[in-house]
Every structure is written in C-alpha cells, then in structure tokens.
Image (tube, one colour):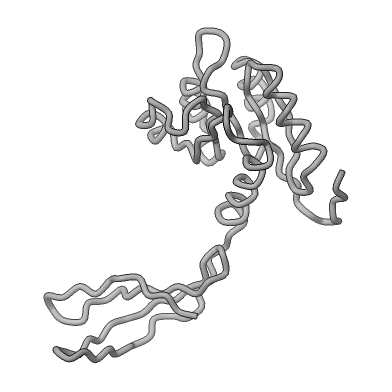
Length: 196
C-alpha cells in the first residue's frame, strides 16, 4: 500500500456495476494501490441515486464509473441520463462498457460522458492512469495565460501578416500559441502555433 502525502486531495470515485467481481476488483485496486484515488461501489441504480441524492448539498463524489449493463430495467446509459436530469451536470461520468465504442455513442455524447472504458480488456491500472490524467488536465487545471495579446509580424515571400498572438501553458506544461486575428481583410490566420 502506498503512503499518502499530507494535504494531498483524495478523489472519491463511485463505481456502479451489478457484477460483484468488477466492483471488488476496482475498489480493491483504487483503495490499496492509489495515493490520490479512493473508491466506493454500489450494485444497483437505486443505491446510486440514493447515495447521490442524499449527499447532493455536500457531494463528496468526484467521478462516477457506470457500467453500461446493469441488472434490472434501467441500463447504464439511462442511469447517466437520470443523473443529469437530477441536476448533477458537472459531475464527471465515465462508462464501463463491453465495447471500445459503445453502440449508443450519440446518447452518451448528449449525456456528456467523459470517456468509455472497455471492462473486458482494460486493466484497473489503466483505468486509474486515465482517471488521474483526467483529474490533472481537466479538474485541477487552471488556465495560465503566459502573455497577453501582443502584436506580431510574419514576413513571407508574398506578403506580410500582422496578427495578435495569444500564448498559454497547456495542461501538460507545454507552451502553446494561436493567432486570433487576421493578417489581411480577407485572410484568416488562426492556425495553432507551438512555442518552446
């Protein structure tokens, strides 16, 4: 078991799966091997909704993993739609599916699912790695603009472009830039620019 550092935020994951083996496998891995992730698991739609609704004013769940196949009348995709209808719009939800791309991908996009894990081929370590990457690059990331708008000039053999360049630091720590102005009246120069 890895030791957790003081003042390190622990992200709580809710796993919703009617298969007891999957629940135990994931919760044991997260709770024993991860410093920044902990997990709680439920086996039914009713348990999931009860847990979310009771703690809605002081929600301590950071990410939800929902299996696409649940026992009972409600599927995993329907559960995700219900969670969104109950007002949990910003709660990141990932789908545990038997496919790499779920057949009902369009419904998942409308329900703002953040990703799909193939639970028949993906290992617990891979799920943890992708969740930690999501936490780092989406949840914890704060935009850090490196420079304000600045006038730049680029000379080519045909004409001279004047444009505004906005630079920022990406979640992975690289400097990026994009032209946000047009060089000529009819010319749009908005391609992304990489900078070291």
